[in-house]
Image (cartoon, rainbow over all chains, first blue to last red; front, side):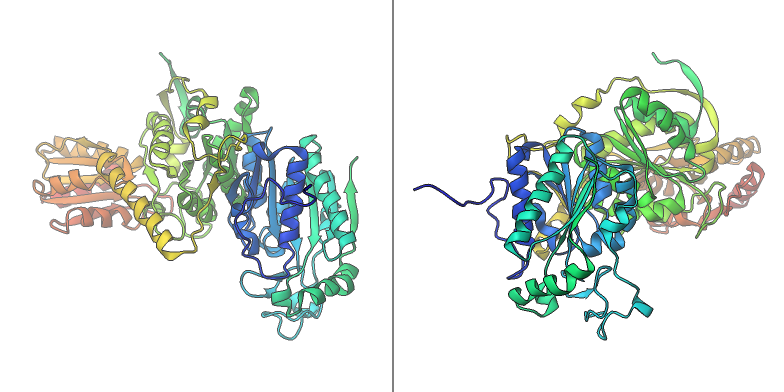
Length: 245
Length: 354
């Protein structure tokens, strides 16, 4: 019988620790599919963040490094500068990339470092139990914004693709989502392109994936995907923000 | 044979690092160590190396972390306030058992402090600069020659024991010029990663993936890594202590001092000897591991100890611990960037000899 669907080769057999309905699993798969498609597993080094995907190092078959909170782009820079022929990616959440690591994010993008960043934006700190993230929506109730995010005291959500698009150096910035089949297909294309860019030496590529957190949003997986469509995407419009091609 | 050249301490470190196969320097400007970055920015591009001025000390140490994970000889340098920022990264290096060279050319503190020489990071460095139970190798040069020699030693010991190593100099050591014979350029940087089977150099589809990590969510596993690490530290303490003894054979007063103050103390000791005072010195060269044994041995012969330091008595405590408080341990110190004169030290020696 012909095999029509199988696990990407660059994923290990370790079961994910992610909550049911969480979209990390989909994004991990898309990253692995890109690595497989380009045949780069043997020279790829991945950098795991601090947050829900902290144990991503167990799930990818390539060499992996666990970074401190927010510093994955700096760690990736150290790897890439020591092995320019390697393929280096970071996989970071919104607290990691857009809050504590914002300086590293902007500076690495500004240097045009030839790396790939997969940025998971689910508008919440998942690992620590659902606190307000820099990307939490206005009015969003979290453990640390129990009355809803108030722009007067808690500021406005940050749009990373738009922010980085003001820089000259980045090669490719795109925001995608994984809440529907059509969106997953587009996300797959974007992630593949972000890796291909690096293989071709085009420079800094970042794909922001608007994701879900059913557990901390207090929604079923299905309702969480609906929330992405109705609340997240209107504030975080999908699309390509920069493509130097 | 390399010939003697006249060099600043900071520059001697930079050139020695290159000659030891270091091709990756990540740093951030701060006085009084910026000459290291300036030197690297000139040299590295010419030899196919990396000089990267990071966006912060935090980023710089994490670039070192990434580079060290690939098995390269990586380094960064800074001065006291910058080392505070690097502490997180140093803890991660230690937790992931990665060797790397960190240079700390100390200035006065706390806070922004000043830019003049100090030894006030002694506790911070020797107790493990960062969160968690760990140590780093700490070497204290007292000459520009030692700045160069210890750069090699730091790389070698760090790799042997799989831990970060630090050159802990005071600002004077970084800024002063002296003749120095630089190490021979014999290390091929390309051959170093192959000696590190744990390095994340890419699997090349030939082995299982390597993971550089300091996260252990199971307490028994984390405990095991801590115990194993401290077994390595025990071996380091047993085998790698280094110190210099000066006129200790008949000494009744033992001066203990490092860096620039050890040099001042030598002058004071010479003057005291002329007056017939039996005084000598033990100069620790490794601060971690601290040379407890020679100091404990000296305690059975001398009347008292005198530490000469650019802090409020940090090493003084280590001397007391080494001798179990069996003899008085006096102190002659200046802080804030002030350095005691030989006369001040001489007066303190006379007082102890009475």
